Length: 74
Image (cartoon, rainbow, N blue to C red; front, side, top):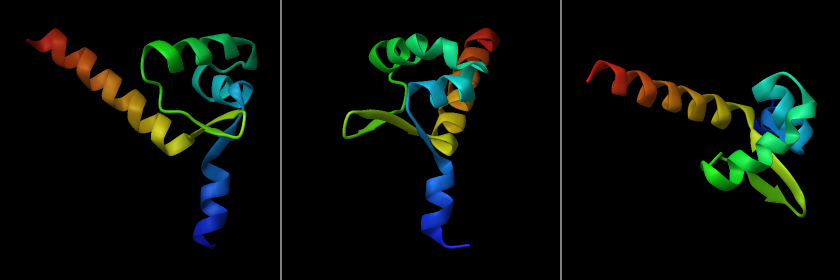
């Protein structure tokens, strides 16, 4: 499998796909726009299309969880 092929499989195209990945429903696409604006959700644009990488989102979510649980421990 080429590196280009893996990257294309990693990219989520559009707020619907990002919402489906994070929340389990494309209906939550407005939350994606909100999070991108307010909480530094790691997204980027290809032209006018909002995109994200699955691998980057997974890492971002893990970092959010770590920060949350670290605050509980202190």
